[in-house]
Length: 192
Image (cartoon, rainbow, N blue to C red; front, top):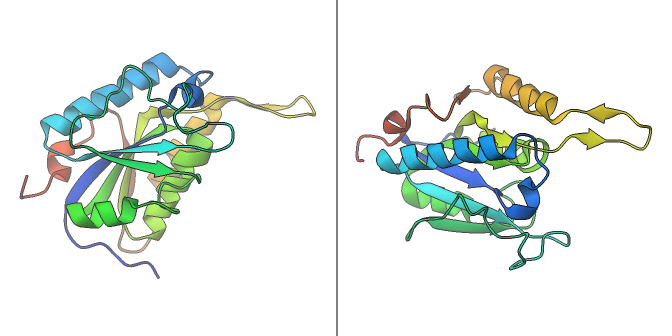
């Protein structure tokens, strides 16, 4: 059974909104705008923003494709986590950083929905965190298979939004909210 996290503070975790990750993503400009709006609202509520950035063989650390999209700029002092696996928790300091912040609730935004966002959401729930997926602030590409079949990006996004509303974990909560509706002030906790 997962350790249930004490406390009521939260953090916004922005995952992989990098040039090479979102260049062909579904409705990327709109989604990036929503991620930027979520970051702006979290900062205004004094909620910590944690930036997670992926690197692998196709996304070389330091390359142009690896960089954050120009619309998103981590502020001075905001935590940056570097990862090499889909889950933002695997092989990173994310869990230690969340513990340092006293965060038990994660608001999640970024890319790619079916890989790193899904793995991070499930990884957070498995580790005892509450999760709110920002339903209009994550994206992915349409998946095309060798047999000619496709899974549309919009369907992948919709499916994860539905899953995060209806999953059931003991002593944890999971939900979705839009970038404009998420309660960042409530997630900031009493000490903010």
